[in-house]
Length: 152
Image 1 (tube, one colour):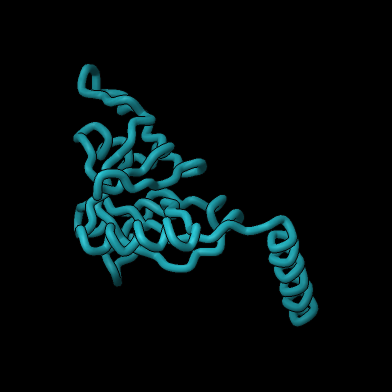
Image 2 (image 1 turned 120 degrees about the vertical axis):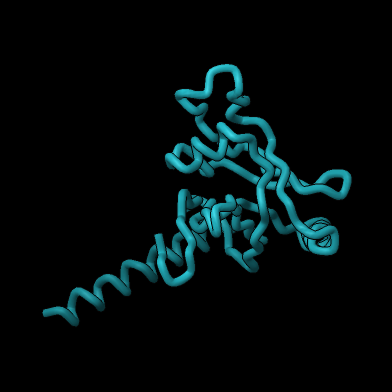
């Protein structure tokens, strides 16, 4: 746990940073059931192929896998159900306009706890082309070589 900010990071979507340019990050609450919160506290969540969609003025996270809680008998929910994200209506409308107009995507980037509440960091993203991915990989390799030579 980061003692300065009180944030405990649970899971990150590293694939999203590989596949998308993140233009903006937005914090959203997430509507969960008790056994799902316990499972997230244990770190049993996967954001790898998740995405967000806006329908009827509400925003939902799809493809987010929260493993069933071991001691949670009948109260466990479907691990792949769509989870409602909690944001102000004004923010949802703004994001909806950007997604429809500019062809951007909404992708969950991370899940963390702050002040005991589960939060999702949603990224407004633009997809990378194959040549963009190669360019980023080449820059990382060059930076790694420079750092290696500086140590010598």
